[in-house]
Length: 470
Image (spheres, rainbow, N blue to C red):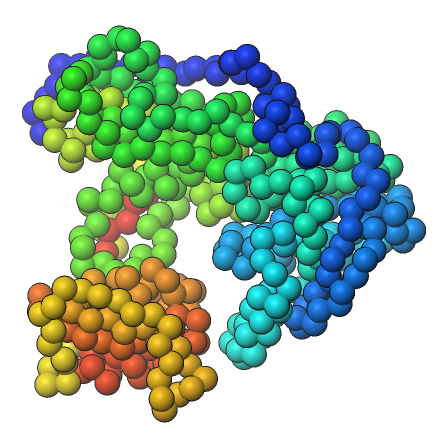
C-alpha cells in the first residue's frame, strides 16, 4: 500500500444530549399510553401463564394486586421465540430467582406471540434429548396485551422492566441490566445506574455521524467509548458508504462490540474456504484478572458493565481513491492505536495449526448436478422421516451450500472450524436436516454421505486475530 501523507487525528468526543425533546419527553410523546417512570402500577392483567413444560393456564389475575407479590422486586423480562439472546439469558434469570428467593419475582413476558405458538415451541424443544430444557423450572411465562401497552416495544425485543417493592415503575432497559450485582444494589438502597431502552433519534446511514456534513473532509478517524445518548445501545453501522460528491468512503460503527468491529475490518483476511469459525479471537493476556475481564467483555458476557466496556464508536472517512482493502488497513492501524491507548492491548493477525472439520468429496457419482439458479427450499418433511424437517439446496456450489446451512445451525454442536476442501465449483442439489434436528457432527455426516460428501478431521493452518498485552 502506498504511503499516504495524511495526518491522523483521533478525536475523542463527549456527546451531549441534543434536540428539543429529552428522551423522557420523546418516550411520552411517542407512547402516550405507556406507564410513566415512578408511577404506581394499578392493574396489569395476565391473560395466560405457561410453565416450563408448555402447559397453558388461562388467567384473569391482576399481577400488581397479587398479595404474594407485595414487597417484592418484580422483573419483567420481555422476549420472543425468535430472539436467541433473550433465550440465552434465561439461565441467568433462573439463577437470580434462586439467589434472591422470595424477595424477587421474575416473569418471562411474551407480548408478541400467541399461547399456542409458545406452547408448541417449548414442547418441540423439550422433546429433543440433546437440547436442555429451554424454560427453567423456577420461571413462568406470562402473556398480556395490557403489558404490551404499558411497556411497549421501543427498539428491539429483549428488554427488562423493574417494578419496585412499592409497586412503582423503576426503569426499563436492556436485559443485561438484570444481574446479581444490580439486584443487590437495589436491596441495599443504592442509586442504580442502568442502560436505558428508550426512543432514539433516527440515524441517517448516508450521512457521517461525527464529521460535520458541510465540511469537505478527506480523511477523519473518530473514536469514543460507548455512548448512552442519541444512539441505541443495540448498535448501528454503515459500511463502505461512498460519497461521490466529496470523493470519500466512510465506515461508521456506533455502540458495536469490539469483537464485531475487528471481525468486519479483518473479514478480507480470512479465506473464503473457511465456512464456519465460531471464534476468530485469540486472547494472549498474562494478567489473569485482566484476562477474565476481557474474556467477559469480548465474549459478550451478560452484564451491563462489561456490555459497555466491550462496545465502542468508530467512524472512518478516507478518499475514495484509496481501495476498500487499503481503507481497511488504515482502520486496523487506527483501531490498534486506540486500543493501545485506552485498553493497553494490541491486535495482530497470527496463524495457528488447528484441528478442523474439512468438507471432502468421497464419491462424486452420488452428487446430483444442477446448473439452474440456486434455490433453497426449507421445512420439507421427508416421506420416510415424518418426524424430521429438511432443507433442500438446489443448484448450489458445495462450499456455499454448507456455509449457508451452518449460519443457521447451532455451532456449539459442530464445535470446530469448518473448511471447504472440495475445490469443486460445480453446482449440485443437496438435502440436509433442519439445523434444529441434528445433535452432533455424526448425524450431519449421515446426511452428507447420501450426496457423496463428508466432514473429516484435519489439521490446518488457520488465521486468528490475536489480542495481547502491550
